Image: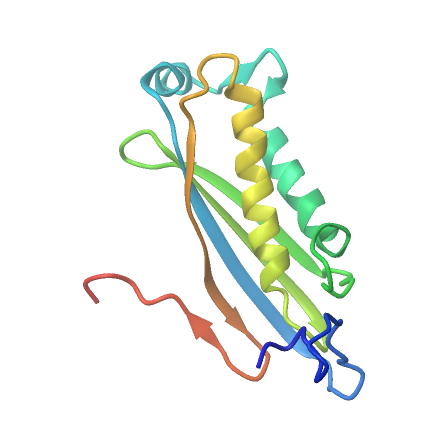
Length: 160
């Protein structure tokens, strides 16, 4: 049974009032596949589009989004995040890796906050670079790990 459906098959917010709070973390990420014209702009140094510094702006967008997840995703509990880090790094092939890690002391997990932070950071890169090319692909958005709730989770790596 899905946790957001009651016994009458109606949507609901999960009641976490009876749960004890604990330290919970979640990390999510995605890849931004860049066309050559954008990779060339990045390889020439710190990339600034006509909208401003791309990576720094995307990091700020990701943090802002993670903090507002409950306003974007129905039934997410509002969480006062204690920690939110967004990292954007170039991969060996020139594409970008986006990773968002959040932490909170609460009665519910923060997976959606990490996923929202990573995805919105990637969308900000797209927005800031689309003037050079719209052939940008955001791929492989997934939860890498979570801890502190009923069940910890770690993404199984291929070939491991």
